[in-house]
Image (cartoon, rainbow over all chains, first blue to last red; front, side, top):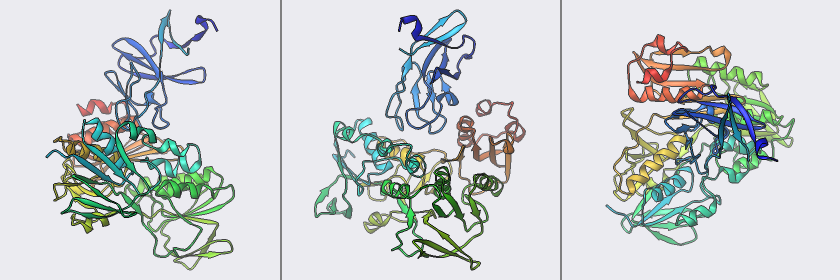
Length: 106
Length: 406
């Protein structure tokens, strides 16, 4: 697979409001997109603790809090921040291509 | 007081969280966790749902993999019961004849399923769901067309019912009260939960008193108060939990349907602390002592008390919060108010996603949310703040709850 084929368009570049999180699909994969200070970041959207969408949660600064059990992650790095989280959430590379937000599934 | 060896009695959710929190807080001494079960500490919510359905593996319920305890320098003594506490010698008596000295003790002995006096204990077809082995044993029996009778329409009973329906079982639920979840939600919301189960094909019988459960024809027969009998292949019982206070009480810790601790998890003995389901603890936000059987308390009270044991000075002070998942319904409940004078809805209950705020005058003291988990965060903040709110604003979904928290 060539490099250009790994990038998948997942949303319009205006789809994620400043300071908010949106859930999208990249093929079969559930992806959460975050707009933190005007920069878009992406992680897997399913919480590593139980089956919940992080995009249904609450983004405060660069911390995403899961809506089900309050697990927290750094949205930029995917790092889990204490109980009940024991496993970080995976991040995905993001780029803006024209009017599109693209993520790289690698 | 700096402790050198902290022993945690109980390797459940609280015990495991406390051990991890001691290390996270930089506690340099020895940490030992003693548990009667063969499993390392695990979370219980999946036991009546994902583990019971088989959609997750047993190990997925573990707080940490077994190897983590070794790398964290935490001694885990499983399959071991604590038989007694010698307070003057600061020593535990263990099953198998060993003794274990301690500087400080954390009692995290949890709770057990309440047994029904009307059931013959020798019955092989009666199941309780409290620990992993219970859930695995019941799971073996949840086959399509099996008739399961559930006694008790509380959280556990209803979650078992929902899981069994998904597995294709015929399900009858028998509840003494006139509504499901009578201890925690108002009747008008309980009615909706009842309707949900009936739509899913559950034969839900409310106001139904069970008089006896006996064996019959390879199954069980249940005699109810009107003289009727119900035949089932298997019976699951969820009629509440009883705190495991005996060990602490025998050692002189005050017991009031729960080991009595303050907001720091302290008992009257400066070397003995307690956390989790077993405690009746003072909650500064509510201004009264409460006992909770819930995931949040098991985790967060244990973490808070562990930090105190490691030298911290911060009280455990959170709005009580719990949840249940049944079919496609996620219900979250916060506040657990003893009383309230108004129920204010946000969203249309008939649409399946709504919140109901419990108010005392103009303050939110409790909230029940159905399929609205994100907003529950702000409901909990409103309850914690004790801020005055306008009921009309709460009821208006166009107005953001986070703005009302400011």
